[in-house]
Image 1: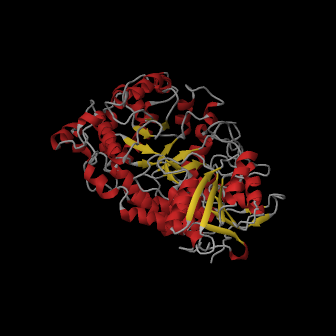
Image 2: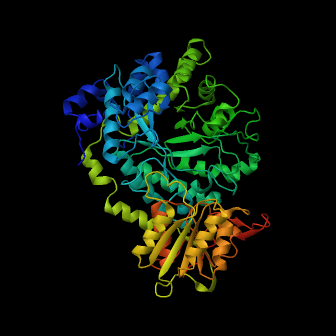
Image 3: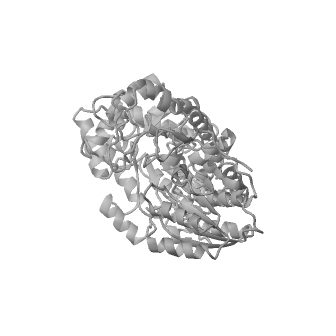
Length: 609
């Protein structure tokens, strides 16, 4: 049974009316006007708030920071130790008191997102700690809940297919429903800003960081789905965030670990990368995240886009007409740190046109660097005021001044409900893509092939899903009437592992092989080939990138699931068993393995029964 008292979490799960009124006095009186989703109040009231802030408070409002722990005031000792080591504070409450940060970002690895009731408690504790400070303001709590392979809040919250799967489904109404339901669940837990959707157009099969996080390779299709998802999220009162401007879809370098360069011409950028961001702006997007990469055609200075005034102010603000919040990608990533030191990055980002500085590796260094830049005249206080006003407008639009707290009843009514979980399953069923089906092997007959061996890659399960993939697939097939056995062979099976799988296949009637980013010389390819050689029918299921099919010409049946989350694996199992027909269509082209210049399966390809 969940304990909602302060003893277990250090937070007040249900703040009293007196506590709420006391904590929000001074800002609520000035700003509580209209419903939570109404337009921002008169800017003069927000400007009055800004005018009463100290310079230190202004600097703090520009930062969005991580903090370890499940509680704002009483985290576990290991989280206290991590906070002291990385931030110099013990708790979220101390972080707010010392730096007056305007936002906090939740991560599963920071132990912020154990389960929905705890998340709501943590959110309430953060709001209470901030609002009780002198001139206290509500905090904009954010997370990366893209769904698919990137999700910070797991079960029992509803988890949806990722963007490329949604792209395979091609339904704007599904994208809107995803945003609406996911947004409602985030809001119920006190999370008001989601760093989603990904607006990058993935045209590079070797992209190591975007891939299936993108809706696809067709800018028109991506634009439509981005706009639909934005409408869904923001209709539920959560700020959506289109990322990563000006576009991260054509790179073979991960900006977490390197500094990518996009070689698109200005004309190609306008045709390929810009449309989804234009669509997001037209849909009223609340925030846009920058990319830590260089685009010489847009700015030949050698600076990453995050630090580029020509890109963020010249193009995003002036050319595209965007006046919402601009948030950096994490300032701990190598792509933004490679040219300038950590003390220069936040100052240069603000000079470029950024409003929110996300997750600097050393907050004290970054915070003091901005403070010093203002005191020495490199940045003006008026420049800070512009960004702070944008952030306050967003907080007001999201209802944070009027209603900063959430209730446990809302968690119970909204998060992971049967209706929401059923909606996720229905959406997933429209995404699974059948690419190969020789001799109509699929749907697999339970009478002819009652015993199924499930082998393959078992990458670490995405946040909050059951995993491992082979076990989830075998379990789902078992529920559908097969006798299914799981055998994990990994992403790089050895000869001995392959031999073990081949021996097991001889005792099965059919084999399902889960593949994960197969390459020409990989053990996964050898595994599938040797399983096919047994004479047992083999169904290959690509559980990440759909490009695996090009490396598996011997497999008589191939499916693309686009991720190894439970909802997508269950859908693939239902397609294999014939409970639903495959309806997904490729949102990216698949090139030939032996001649990448030739397309093996074009965008829009997909078989059915």
